[in-house]
Length: 66
Image (cartoon, rainbow, N blue to C red; front, side, top):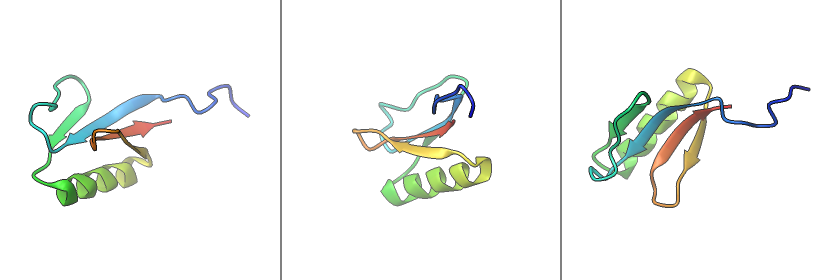
């Protein structure tokens, strides 16, 4: 067993519907028009990169690689 213990290796994307929380930076940031589009983007990115989806309390999603 490795030493990573479930540590996050990186944030691949941030997906939100709120333009005030839309971030810049090195990770991909996506501004979706609605919740359905937000979830569709999140699922597609996670599937493509074999990553996990983390839903934040405010409804935004982080796509993370463990």
